[in-house]
Image (cartoon, rainbow, N blue to C red):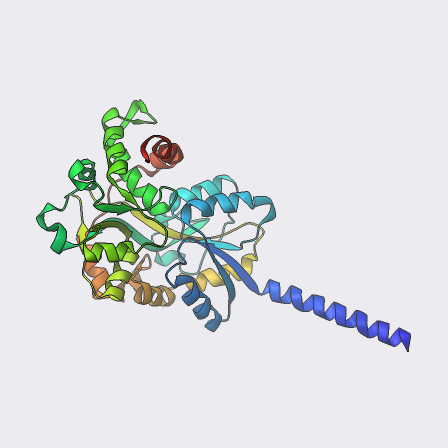
Length: 337
């Protein structure tokens, strides 16, 4: 009788262990800097409907790359989406990304990624938006004009640790490239950058910076493209968009699979997530600008109007990638008050 009981217990333990392994094998952990404002919840639900069990972990862009590198030898995540080329190049340099080819690779412009390790899903023009009734004709035609003292505390910027904040900051510095200058930037460039930083209001966690634009309390803020679309829809408010002649920085959100991941399952998820159908639904819900041409055909009139109002700034991304960490460090040590 004792032998029978022991045998049953062993069998139960084995079955329980197998069940846990199977459950883990069939699920994906996905890190993203593009999971806020309901995106992570929406994606989790839609993925479940498509037969995937995913855990979306939201992490700000500046912290996300560092987190992944810190976990390199004890990886938790299977996939990452939302980072731009600069951040993915850092991960690739650490040999953390596997090569794969999603089913829709031939449908998109793979030059927006690297065509081997990470692929484009969303195009994000980074802009400053404003309250037209408050700012009126006094709106700057270019963000370098924020260096003028008259704009002191009139515009909101995000932390330089995040992708949007540091990319817009970099889009100023690249205009003043000088091989003999400090960190490759001329003295004039650093003067403009310093004034831009010191005249700005840095977002405080929890504040309604969009509400401040609408109320006129602080009538200008930086924002990524899909955020403009989402807030316009949710707030039923039309923002002005600063569109410099030189253009605005375009960043491209990419999707990649990490080493030590469930590659086959992750590839299946990438096939679904980056497909025209899913990206069209993603765009309809959150106002994203799809990298997939077929999804873009189904984008809303607001998205198409917005994309027609801006154009891409010509940026030497290699120059930016090489220097951006030091540029941010200089700003945080010398400019931020």
